[in-house]
Image 1 (tube, rainbow, N blue to C red):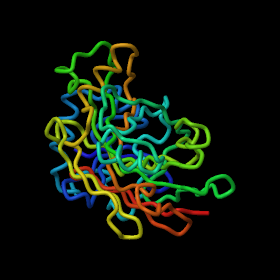
Image 2 (spheres, helix red, strand yellow; image 1 turned 30 degrees about the vertical axis):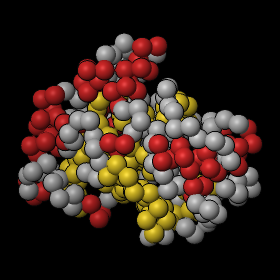
Image 3 (spheres, helix red, strand yellow; image 1 turned 135 degrees about the vertical axis):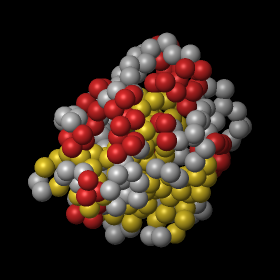
Length: 298
C-alpha cells in the first residue's frame, strides 16, 4: 500500500494510491479521520491497513472523494518531521571509496561501526518542488539518493530479529549536501541541514508490501543522465543492525525517519567533481517505491 500526503481543492489530506497510481483515495472516505501522516503512523491498526490494501484495488468510481492523481498536488509524505532525521554515513563501500578519494584520504575498506549523524529538517521538500541552491554560501551542492525507513511505533531495546515489527514503511529521500560547508566545519550537520535540503516522497510504502530485508534498485539522475545505480542489498549496516543498535541507547519514536546512506555516483565522486547548479533537475528513484524529481533553483 502506498500512503501519501496531498492537496486537492485547497485542502491537505492523507490518502492511498490505487493499484495503478492513477487515482488517490482519501482515508476519510473509509471513516479514518487521521489529520496527517504522523497521526496515521501512530494510530493506524493492522485491520485498517488490511482494509486500505483491499480498497486500493477498488474502482475509483466506488470511492467517495477519489481524485485523479493528475489533479492533486503531491506533498512530502511527512511534511514536518518531529525530530531530526537520523542518517547513515558511508554505508555503501563504493561510496566510501569515492568519498575518501575526494578528501584525498586513504581508504582501508574497514567499517567496524556504523557512522550516524543527524539532519535538521524544518520542512521536507515535495516532489516537483525546487531545491534552493543557497548560492550566497554554497558552491559545491551535491545530491544523494537514499532509502528512508520510517519507524511505526516507539522502539526501545529492540533485538535484531524483531526490527521488522517496528517499521511502518519506506520512502525515497535526496540527502542534499553542501560539500564545502561539510569540509569547512569538519562535520556533517550544518552542510546537510540548510532549508530545502530533504526532498522526500512521493509516498510511503507500508512495510508488508516489500520483502524484508529490502533488496531494491536505487538510482539517481541529473538532467536525465544516470549517476547512481546500485541496490540496497549492498548496505554495509542493514536495517536490522541500525534500528537494533540505535534503540539500545535511545528510544526511536514513531515517525522517526532513518536515511540509510547513499551509494556511489554522487557529484563529488567524479573527477573532476560534478556539482549541482541552478537549472539542473535531479531525480532519485527506488524500485517499488517511486521517484522524486526536483529542479535546483537559485
